[in-house]
Length: 384
Image (cartoon, rainbow, N blue to C red; front, side, top):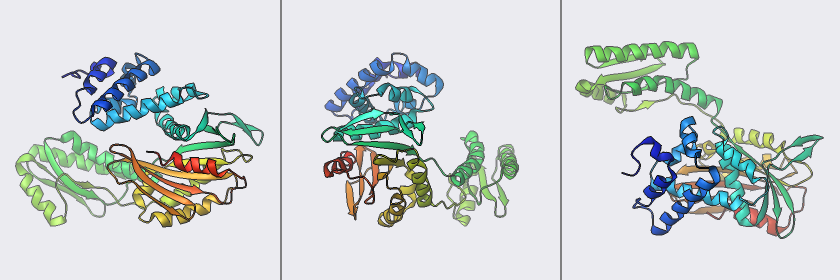
């Protein structure tokens, strides 16, 4: 075993050696991942991974996960950085990548920059521009190499809604008690609503007391508070009782269902468009890119979603495109369709990483842009 100890995971040579043993990678992929690690070692520094593991840098999730898709992601990551290495203000992007708190932001900018660069644009990262006598720094400036036309790009990543965060906090407070007790107990149940902090603390104590009863009596116990929580807990020796209890209620052992919530992701995305367009100059055509996985997860009709979002885009004459994107682990067939001048694209970025894009073209943009530039922007997101 090449990677036996924690310190092996920040040893560049051992990471390279291990990548050569992954059977699912082709010989060509093994060579590419070898070169990727060598490039990252030089670009990020010999001690980068050691420091990253020490501080809990997000890149460590890709390093310690040894699944083949993570090594394909490493290939993509290194090749994207290499593509941008000679672009203006590249060091600003690299600093984001190295920063634990700015890594996700940096990767979002890297993704967009890589796409635009491959399509034929010169990239300027963090350009300075004056908006209403105030200096602002959009994420990117694009210059078409053939026509010299200039565009600015603002990139934003939407997190979960406030409601979703509250649901997550409620769930986490309770499931943490259960997970800390595994493998000593089995459980299932449901929490029926999001709880305030004081109420949640009270319920957490009752769940802890129930867990202690199960351990003390070595038998099944339940906690039921009307319209709040219903949970059954049992030790291994009394799992059968829990299974019967679960069957009567339509639950499954090991499953704990959270409270329902409804978030209007289309409305949230519209608000984000309004917010981000303010960061861009009125004197140029602009692009806003919004990453919102929840939008694609919750909508059922993409054409209807496009129809609703386009009206927000049309409000701003200095916007040329708004692109809403998502990314998830899985497999898909390449899919695309047009609705009027807008485009939906879905395809694999790398094997097991799928990208989705809604590309909204603003036909009311006040600036005349050459068809070749518009085509390049569309093509930036077609090339998986």
